[in-house]
Amino acid sequence: MKQLSKWLCVVAIVFIAVVSCSTKSDEMKLIPVKSGDKWGYINPKGEYVINPQFDDAYPFTDGVALIEMDGKVGYINEDGSYLLSAQYKNGTPFRDGFAVVVLEGSVPTCIDKKGNVIFTLDDAKQLSLFREGMAIYYNNDKKCGYVDNTGKIIVTPQFTWGGIFTEDFALVKNENQQYGFIDKEGKIVINPQFENAFHFREGLAAFYNGKQWGFIDTKGAYVINPQFDEVGSFVNGLASVKIGKTYGYVDKTGKLVINPQFESVGTFSDNGLAAIKQNGRWGFIDTDGKIVINPQFDDVSYFMGKYALVLSAGKWGLIDKTGKYIVNPQFEDMHSYFALDYGTHQAVLSDYYDASAFVTAFMKKAENDLFDGLDTSATLQKVTDHPFYGDCINSSDKYTAYCNEHQKMDDNITIYRTNFFFTDKIYSMVPKYEYFYGYQYKTGEKKQYNFSARLDKIQYRLTLSGDAFSHGGAIATALKNELEKKYEITMSETKSDELPEYATSQYISEKGKYTFVIEVYDSSLEIYVGMGKKSVNADTETTEEDYYN
Image (tube, rainbow, N blue to C red):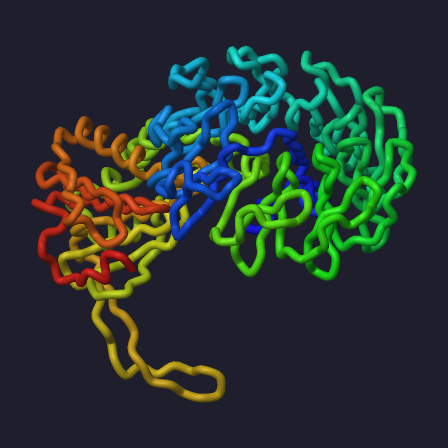
């Protein structure tokens, strides 16, 4: 997939994802390159303009480039100085003076080049970069609509999927999973009726009738009847098509102007060259179908003005329109404009999770069913009689019982397992009893339970998924605050060098009716409740392994 990221409008990719295929007549003045494990920028002569220093770097748009550092996204100027420091969890490139970003734990926000907030959509599940002054917007109900660069909702969320605007039209999908087109007022101009389709390019859009591909005009009329196995979009009057196992090109009447003969193809750039693949290697043809650069590369980009990116023997370099190297292959990776049109930076997802709603539900559950429901003098008998846990004695240690019941706290958080720790032995072994198994008598041992064993502490293991995933820190903080208020306690945060293995944070209380430990991991929370002890971590006869089984 890394090599495919260089491609622009390769038919195999466009067939799967309805991506905007951008051809740029302007060559990139600064090209993102990877040397070692860092990214920097070179000019078309191969000279470093910005030395390798970023974890990832992308092409300049609007005179600004998106970069990644230490898991955060920021923006730099053409001299390498920061326009906006790497502070965002994710972001789109700047287009027409605007970008969409999301901060840790926040919802998507539109900003200008000074970092000023233009608008924020509180109910946005996802917000895309701007195209033709419009951004794709998904609300919390997973419905798609569109907003302009002031934050005004132009098209109310109503579709199950929506694409970018090109030539004043956007491709959308309805509840019946059929594709059609809307205008910038949200009016349906071509009724949803297609099993698949592409965006409009040069007045025509590709559509799929369930068997083959053809092309329609902006009124929905058939211009080229369905007859192809795969297609690309029109650029410079030509579109790639697949017939059988090979690719060629047609004009806007559907006439084959370059016969199918290639293993795969790209879209023609403004300079009249398109990438083609023969015998597992990539080269370039002109609009007459003549090979002008022999197939010899492992991967290529489209031509960006006077040069294209090429991969040879595991390294990337630049060639001119004759196929001559202007920068020898020497880089681990390079990005073309396609890196911005396809992948993780087309849109940002909301990073907000309503931790308070979960904590409210958890505390109500605690009062009705969890530790308050057992009280501080609980025994093994009370645990097994408790309606929430039921008969759940499955013991891995003579002092530990656990319940494997999965209890949903909300759509994104589940109590995966509840462990109970006791100060007294909860069972002893009764040896030398016989039982019948198959056709043989066996001897062995069975457990005899001590139902008066006193409960010492409880462990709840919560798994985080969906919107809650990666938000364990926010949930733990909200829960800490609520526990402190309800039980009149103080919870202190553990120093980083004292954290349990793999934990990202920990809170501990040492006094009160109950004592608590909250541990945060990448995809889970561990909550320990001490039943009236000085500390949850007070010495017991259980082993460390028992805490995590």
